Length: 257
Length: 159
Image (cartoon, rainbow over all chains, first blue to last red; front, side, top):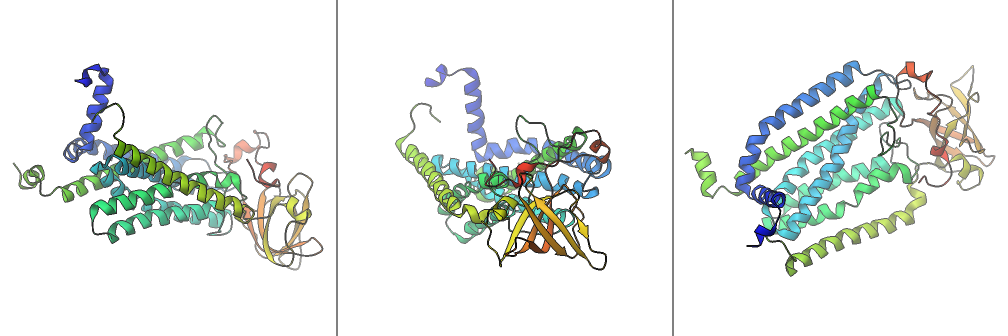
């Protein structure tokens, strides 16, 4: 009975992870959380969009095109941290063989790919009026394109392999190798001469824009994150039902008790 | 789930995962450091005046447009200006065409074109490179001149 030696909070945490790790508990807990997530992500994105498109002041150089930033920057942030979370799920699956981690990896890839695509498209739309070009092969843009290809590669690899277990291991490995790209994206604007401007935010420094411009950006980033988690959990629930359709609890759920 | 030492099998898998990540990171790191020069989108004025940029082939040159250096031709779309790293290196650029909206004196530009043997740069395309600073127009007069960051176009990589 070694558990008695653990402090309470550890027991609670352990219990929580254990429950979330089981497909059925994840299904039930996420089912209760999802309505809240949908409302919160909808509210923050709506607030952020109205605020940034309608009320944020124009930029002294760019005029109204600066508003594209409020769609572009959160997309780029979530595209990268979504990849990091997906890779962590891959590592958990490789080491502990927890099934739900594989479900998480598989379900994050299409969302991440869509958000990366959004970041690239809005970046191009922003680049045309400000820089004078849709696309340039500089380090930041190219490494973000590589991020899109990594997401697409994971989707393709998954669907190319019949066996779920080996497909899970292969995609987790690919996701882990692709982690190398994340610091390259982040530091590309510092390591090399690029057309892309450096980051406006860094830890411990004042943002390079006034509060009336960065607070709505923060709201949008929050909204994108919430939306990402909402979609992720929704996809995972569908995938869990797909994989567990033979079990009693799913059959009872479908038939209705 | 048990606490205490990891099972040998899991520990081996953890080591494998760490090895894969480290191997990929070092391979990419080596490749990038070998490519370092080619990873740059443009040559800085310092590199051009030091003779590090090739002449006669299409390259990109980037720098700050020197205030007061822009000369527009009256009969054509030709524009002449000087780009600088604000560290003493200047390059003359000539361009015929329509400049991007954000082209102004004191702002960064990246010009694609050919460096002549005389050290003058003939651009086919001029892109505006803006910085990470955003502010409403009414703040510009209040704040100190923060947007001309000479760091951007200094020679070598920025750390």
